[in-house]
Length: 294
Image 1 (cartoon, one colour):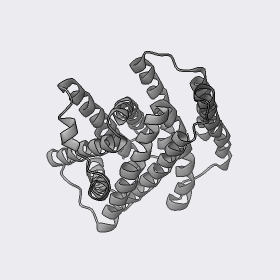
Image 2: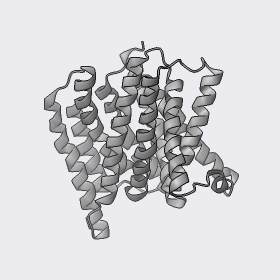
Image 3: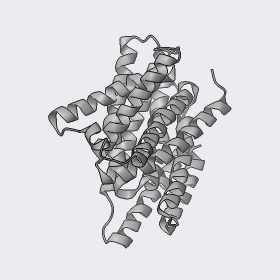
Image 4: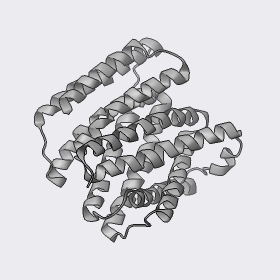
């Protein structure tokens, strides 16, 4: 059992790694496709977690109900959900998309009350008003800059949040059923479900050509993509599930307050431009909302 401070440290590290990776996911989702980038990072995650489990403590024994829960969690959260996530990245950017993950603690807190008997404070739902303000600010910014309200990108982001929340809940249930299971094994089982989603897509919708496209990039780009995939999948998921295994769901999810801040900072450095006044306003609303939620 890890301490509360360690839980927060792991959750913070997971968000830092993921925020960095989001820049790379955004860049190559735009250059190649959302489908290719998502399938490639899932393949890297599957390989990394499988190797880590083999050279580490081995694969944890697991019963079929828990395995099924992790499989479906990966299929929904890492597979289908991340398709919407990376699509939102490519439309409105990583920082703005991650701000909308502010809705996840409310979703998780509500379901955790019914599924895991974790306490819920209904006064915290006042934070929803500030999260809704973030949606309005981003839409208003799009209206001022492009002449139309940005609905599609925001909708993709909120769908991604919902799918990810379902995946988190199913993962926590699997941990409760198999307390001795380690994070490497849990993530490996989840990536099996994720890869099955892309197998179906490649088989019945569009061939992915993962390695064929990857081989066309120069060494520098290949290294950048692999680094992003390892940070955004293996490292971030390992740290996040370690925190999730013992921590309070709403609190662990609440540490996501750092993700949009980190992503906004990295985007500013990457593109060498200062965040807009609308993004600053949305971040302020986001922080106030999270202060209420936490």
